[in-house]
Length: 285
Ligand SMILES: [Zn+2]
Figure 1 (cartoon, rainbow, N blue to C red):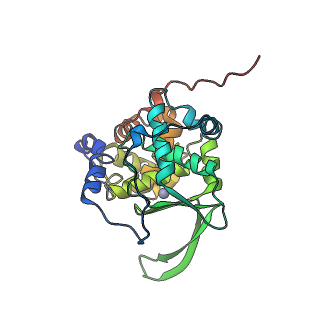
Figure 2: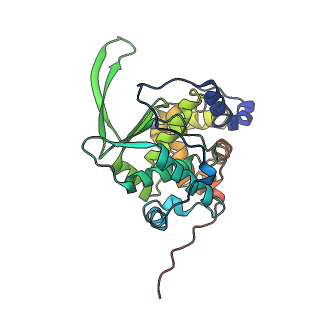
Figure 3: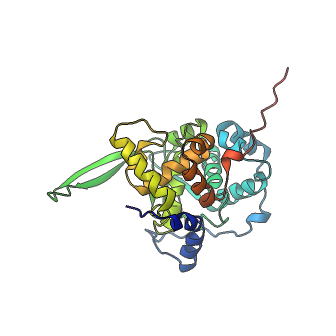
């Protein structure tokens, strides 16, 4: 369980940034296989922006992309271009990965890290993409008896340390279109960042811990909550589901959980509740 304390809130901005930088500097080795990485380009600032067709596809398929303020657009587009050249997306379960799939994933991943260092994905080996939910074998250990039960569950996303993100395309596509606070790409990218920070991003005190406890209590009482009850699983999931709301429904989150919203603003170095309304697409007549 996370600790509480007023100083922790002040320290939180370091978690996804300073600690991330430290993890990079120390070169945490958490990869699971020896596959060679593709050469990394560090020319993000000079990389080409998106083609008009790519931009219009994102404006249609990823409403969140439309909400990015004009001042942040050039940097976002450069990062998306860099992601597309650096991060490999591998089709699994018979899925053939199309360019638009790569683009929709890249845009959401880069929006999540837009306020962070451009090297945020440097340690990510790649993305595995299934057509739909995928099955993961798991062992369940009874804490009292120690009895191990073999089992498994269907997942829409999973993050394997800092190595790989696994996604269900159907959930990526649905999550991008609906602005309902469910976004599997944001969720898994936040897990990835948390892994980069050695788990310290989600294990901090301050508003994050207080709000986590409040969610646990509300779920125990059977109350309806704005934050997905899945966040009561543990602080790691709480950070991930809170981030989904932060990006998809920032004003609701700020209104109902101002301290949590402020904490996430500092952590992600973005203030999406204050982004101006997106420019509407001109329609004839
Ligand atoms: Zn999760």
